[in-house]
Length: 235
Image 1: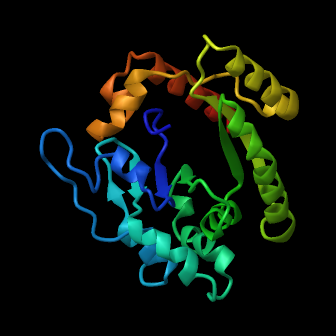
Image 2: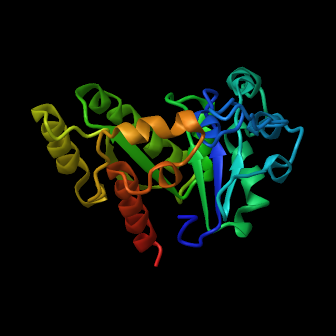
Image 3: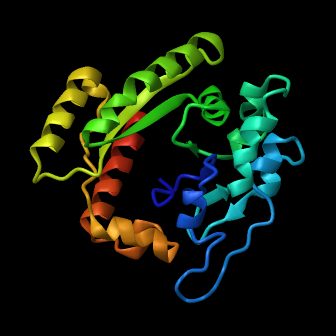
C-alpha cells in the first residue's frame, strides 16, 4: 500500500514482535547493524506516551511503524484493572488516524485484551487463514469474538476480508480447506491466495519486506496482487 503512494502506519500489537523484527528493528541483521528501539506500544497502552512519540520511520517511503517488544506481554495483566481497558488503543490512534491513509494492526495469536483493543480500534478485520486443518478450528471462536466486539464495543467493525495463506497447491488438504473457507465466507475471501514461498520465509531474517528482498518472487507478486484487491475496496 505504501508503494502505491498511500501513507501507512503499522502497529505491532504482538509481544512476539515479528512485525517489528521483520522490518529490521530490534534485531541484528546480516550486515551486523542493529536498529535500536527506545519505546514501544507498551508505553502507549500503559499511559506513559502518545503513540506519535514511538513512531519509527522504516526504510520504505510512506511506511511508519509503532513497534512492539516482549514487555507487551505484561500489558495483558496490567490492563485488567484499567479504566475502559478495551478502548485504550482506539483512544491513542484517534489522535493520529487522520494523518494516515491506512493503519494496519498486527494482533497476537490469541483473543486476549490486546486483540480486543485492536478490534475495538478498527473498522475492518482481515483474517489470514493458513490452508491447513487446524487453522479452521480457531475460526469459529474468532468470528464469535468479532461479533461480541461489534455488538458491545465497536458497531463499525466488519470482516474486511479473508486471506488464504501458506497455500501448497500440491496437497489435497489445502484445496479442501480453501473450499471450506470459500463456502463459509463467500465473497469475503480474497481472490489472491498467498502461496508457500521460500523467499517469503527468508525476507524477515534480513529485516526486509518481500517487495524489497525479492520483488520478482512468487510471494512478492502475490502480496502485490492482494494490495491491489484491498485498494479497490476503498476506491
